[in-house]
Length: 241
Image 1: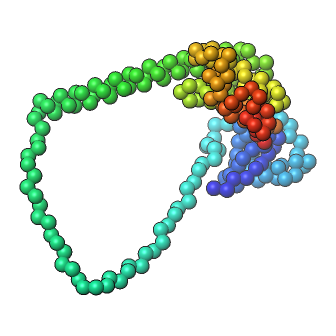
Image 2 (image 1 turned 90 degrees about the vertical axis):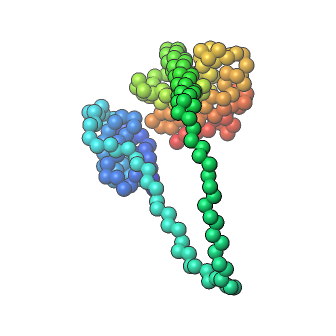
Image 3 (image 1 turned 180 degrees about the vertical axis):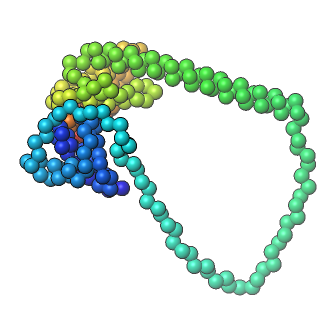
C-alpha cells in the first residue's frame, strides 16, 4: 500500500494518508477532510490559511488507514519428464497396532492436571498483569503531575510493555533537544521509583527505556541510551518529522 504525505487543512499538521481513500482525519485536531485537499495543502501550503478551529466530534465510518496485503502467486511448474525404467511401487502392509486406550480414571486424572496447570498459569498471568497495570497507572499519574509541558489531550501519553519501558507522549507545543532529554530522564526516574529500581544506576533506570515525543510540528525518538552522554542527536536521540 503506497502512502502519501498530506497536511491537515485545519491545523496544518503533517499527516500520512492513503491516496486510495476519499477522506482522512487529523490525529491532532480531529478535522475530517478530503484527501485530495490535504495533498494540495502539502504541495501548495501558501494557498491555505489553516484556521485551526475546534472541530465537531466525528461519528462516521472509520477513516483509519487499513493495511492491505498484495497477493503473491507461485510460478507454474512444468512437470519434469521421468527417465529410466519404471519401478514397481513397494506396498507396506498396515502393521498391527496394540490397543493403547488410556483407562478412564487415568484420562480424568491427566485432564485434571492439565486444567490445573492452565488455571495456575492464568492466575499468575493475571497477577503479573494486575501488578503491571497498577504500576503503570502510578507512573503515569506521578509523571504527568510533574510534567512542565501540556499534553495534547488526556490520551496524550501511552505506556507499553510489561516493564513499562516504552512510552509515547504527544505535546501541544514542540520542545528542544535538551528539553526532550530532560523529559526522558524525568520519566526514567519516576519509572525507577515506582518499579523499585535504583535511580542512581542509569543502566537500571533508563537504559531499557524508549520514548517517542511528538507534537504537531515534529518531535524526537529517544531509544535506550547507554549513558546520559548519549542523550544527544545522532546517538540515542533522532528527530521525528
